[in-house]
Image (cartoon, rainbow, N blue to C red; front, side, top):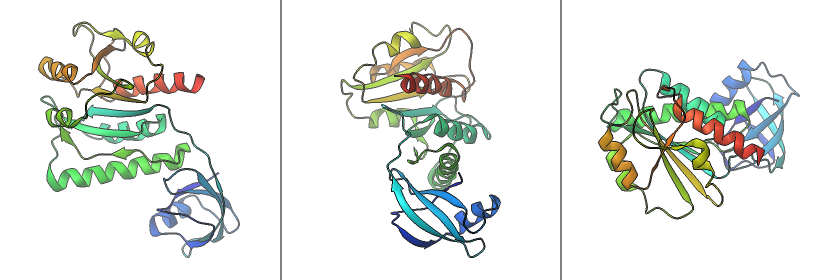
Length: 247
């Protein structure tokens, strides 16, 4: 069923669709009487029907359904930004796989550099990608995509690690001792949140990895193959999502 995001809070009754939702409804070729689902990001979703088709699109919001499709525990991906459009792709797929938040990072080997207004605009762009991905994949809570930050400053901003908050840094093959993914998740009982740190093209430097370890991040390996910067965090997230779904 077609899904549209509307900024909330939503309530039962008649509402005119905002321009972005009108464009989406037009692209979906919705007609008067068509059923659709609305969500505002606060949780759950609303059954609705289209009363007037675009361009004067109006919908009748019928009833709220307390449907949630989130991962538990929540996962934050902190990623050294890959270059070009690959960060767009990473945000889209991370949303589909269930990430609760994405923190773009600038490291010593990061090609893409964002500061000031440019960082704010790019974060808004990525947030829109996450919203569209939620419309497609069925999530009713939109992950937060934060403005880009420097790795060292971000590590320093983290609160003291609680016993139920797990942190891991993805380790490239041959980059020192690291737990296997299976060994790491073996300690998953009771975790309330996960934060996954992954480097850009070329990975994190040894100094950056050491900083992460001192901040409570456990080096974790995904196997003997070298994965791209946008592939590695998604591989771990996908594996975790599969385990969580099966539990």
